[in-house]
Length: 336
Figure: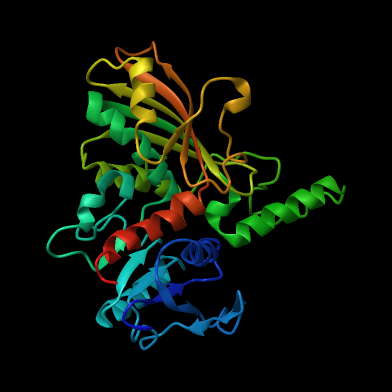
């Protein structure tokens, strides 16, 4: 520990989009960081982030660490989380490594923060995908009020969801096409600039993708509804940051548009936009926001009781880094 009142915090994957955002949020919020330890692979060790040098992650890198954030992907989490746990650190993993592990809490603080309390607090917690974060925050208050029978979701994912490399690739393709240099991208890869790709993740038997299947299971876990009927179609669109989703929910009990709006307005972490055209939330508009934005709330007349709505959020900040930091803040209460 840095001293008796501050914490030693490690961020693994500090040069990733989420890692950079974690470092920024730790500097802005009330986490009492005394020593911030940035860790990376052989490829990134030695680089600078805000004047701090990235050290090489390894078995001894977590000595004295109070809490460790993993933002470097599932492979790195598989290799190094155990070392952090053995060193006594609390671990919050933002990768997909532990999201479907029934023995590890999967937490969205607005929905199931109770998993972080109790006489024995978990030492390892998984943070869901940004899509699952957004859907869980919105579906939770509606489901508690009227019971959810079925959910159909279409998501619109930015390049940021695939990491820095994807953002750079979209930038290069866009510049090449706009400057008249043509499309010289690898023919084996579908062009992302000025395009819409109906596939996020690898295709699985049956036609769904790994991402779509994982989102369903993550939302089921967070809502504690293992039987929830849910269908997801995810598309990669030519945005650099942010994400949005069109959501149609069928309920067990009657729920009017007015009642749904009232529930969403009163829910923690949600900002409801009225339906005037100039107030509808778009991914570009909500970058930098720490809320889940909801608009176009309306009745769905095709089912007995249904509501359709639009969701937008900053997938890097709200959907990933902030969710992880809020988990840590709850776990650390009373330790400092």
